[in-house]
Length: 443
Image (cartoon, rainbow, N blue to C red):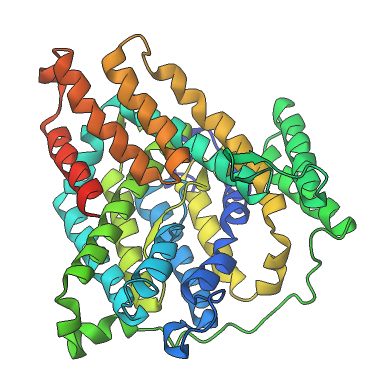
């Protein structure tokens, strides 16, 4: 096992990998609660029952997709990166495709399935890996830093340290709010342990924060340990039915737009996460990702299987950076995370203690670690500094990893051509320029 996952070469051990995998699980376990809530349109009143996906089935499908994706990523690509249904993509699925476009959720799942099949074909041909490796080093560093700022912003927002402000868009939250104070406490405790160099400091910080939260009744104490696994029957295989029984519903412009959106956003969300987390873990060699093709295949397979099970598009999760920060370096950590998602099927009540106040400090501090790549960018060269800067600031400002990548990549060929460095531009970057421009115009 140690030899397969290259423990000695990566300078890691079972303890670090287990803690790292557990930390990643805790940082992203919220998806087991949030994804069913979003896809079932639970908070939208007045809808016919046919528009609501079965919440229990979506929970089971989510856990299965997380487990399968994480284990495949760990075993095939040997990266400490976990997978789960993408936030943003699930909201697009529910509120845009189903609620706004009026497309039945069954057909929306078919769109996810089709996008997954296309992912597999692209991965088999090596196109996805070629595209990722064609991205210049400066932009890869920018992607990592941008995701760091993005995930910090998400943590601050989830904990309500930062809130909506009609005058300035965002503002400071209510610092007298007990849950905000719990987040600040967790942040201070975690910072102290990390400064002291305590291995797994982020995980221990989350654990202490949860215990303190229970003591002050800010974090609920589970009323049970075990629960029955909800049936997958209401959603399993539904994605395949329109293909065989109602193919006419798939021959529409809207359906094509939906598939392309799932395809585009998932591709570059995954690419961005792979680049940033692999770089953080020291797995990037000469600006290239080893085993990138296998990592992308794991993502593609899971997206397809996830759609059949009954959940929206699956992608690599940036919360994996929390596990890397806690010591994870190999695919064994991702396997640990996957196993924990399987166990989560039976321990659903325990997940209630993983509130945003518990996970927020980890997400906030991961940003500190990830922006270190800013030092690798040559800010004296304006032609590369500008696109890198736009990648970095666009991710948190647009609340989208893919959009941030798109904006920076549009500027890159322009500034490089004007600077007389046209020969340094990889041909693929021109193709991406066209794709990104079309993305903003049509999607």
